Length: 223
Image (cartoon, rainbow, N blue to C red):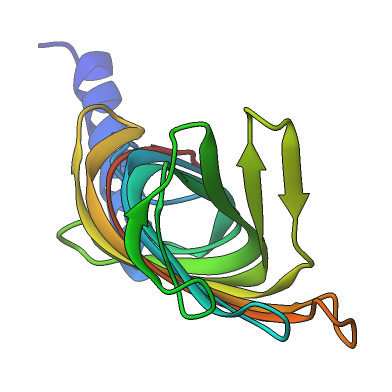
């Protein structure tokens, strides 16, 4: 081995040693390669499922009426993370019942199923927070404004109520199916209340209690 070869190897070894000492002194660690499966950055959650509805209407003129039924539900959340696993998002929720069962004190009827031309739907627009645990269990709450729409296709009638306070509580579990996509199941409770046509002879106090089960699909971006 020549002197120049030995010198080159000595200089290389010395340089590597110095670099290692500097990294150690700075408590330096190389960044881990991003492999997805984290709740960071952009957030989009879409869900479809079934909903059990109970809506009460306490009207000055018609007394107490109750609408019940089971129908489809849709849930959309879009936003971004405040910190990893904690997400701030807008919430849009909608569900409806075709041919709901109606009870009325005024008309002395109890759980009478209406024609399928009659439908009752409820919606909410608001904002909320969703938190994921390390095992991908999530808890979500949203507050906003909600209203009801009663339609009679046979008579071509559509009645939309005033907007009132609305809220949703939701919890579930997801499993990763890709670097950014997760799918899972969730249960939720949705409540809306308010006063429609306040001060009018037809004024009614509205209140709903909804329970639903949904299949979730979530896209998780990255900062």
